[in-house]
Length: 167
Image 1 (tube, rainbow, N blue to C red):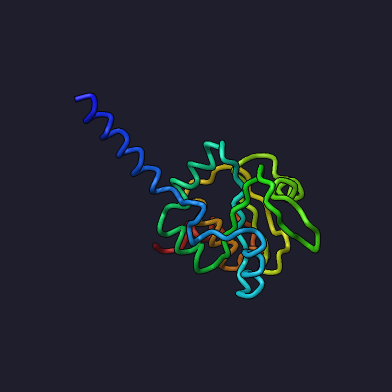
Image 2: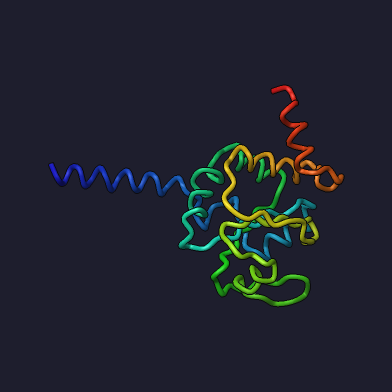
């Protein structure tokens, strides 16, 4: 009986872990490759700044990035980049060499997760710190991805207009 329970517990844990985006997930790019792709495709960049120990980062993976509507919008409108804020991986930005750790510091990331938005040329648009629930995250993606930020629309005005839009 104990073995059956233990086997079921291990299987359930494996299933829940398999739902998380893995580092080899095709949605995600490394820093340098992602910025090159953004320049070529003229799409903005979403940078997910995380750490391996961060519980809220894992929750973003499980509850937000794993959702098909979020993944679909990201893959169509953005180049998605992952940046481990504690890694020593090499990264280049604005003609300078960094590690992933020093790059996160360069963007003044002080908590995890942090979502950074860059334009297609790599110019910094915004940092959004903390966990963001999936429905709110989709609004944020649409705000940047559909060009509302570029047009000078405030996020609050965008949300108000989205709330009034027919569903």
